[in-house]
Length: 206
Image 1 (cartoon, rainbow, N blue to C red):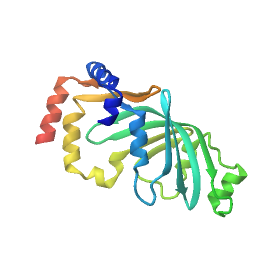
Image 2 (image 1 turned 90 degrees about the vertical axis):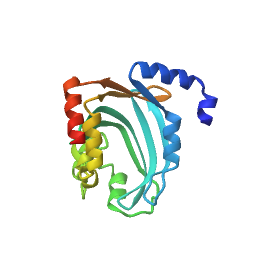
Image 3 (image 1 turned 60 degrees about the horizontal axis):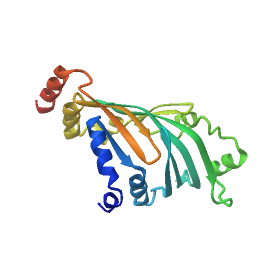
């Protein structure tokens, strides 16, 4: 609420966006959430800035036993949502990794020092990572595709599936893009027509 009091123009912007089936998340709100990430493995010193149409994210993290400073421009190309799929396609650009402790002797530190990692194609590196998570369904060049419904906990959540059956036919995400101060999400109503809304509601409550 204090942010809204300092930026009353956000209320008018939200109203205009609502009419156009859009909503925007202020970049400062994303910074606040990132600064309050908790846990031993949570990224530290997270920095977020807009690089339209994407956002630049930087953080200090542990990468296979090596403390690194990582940054990349993240561009969200597509998001597909239905009862069986929660799929997001992203491009990673301007990827940078730097080992923060020169004394660490790990395979990752050695690769970073040698310059052997091709950071222009992070998808290729992700494709061959050990213990590749199930939700990573595609990775090639600078493109990475995640399907969160491949995670067993989400895939077996009956309440989530019912919610997605009801929601997906009503609205879909048309685009996710940034401007200098916001991350904007554009929506499209009734993507497959009214009949699919009725069918989705029947599946959700059957």
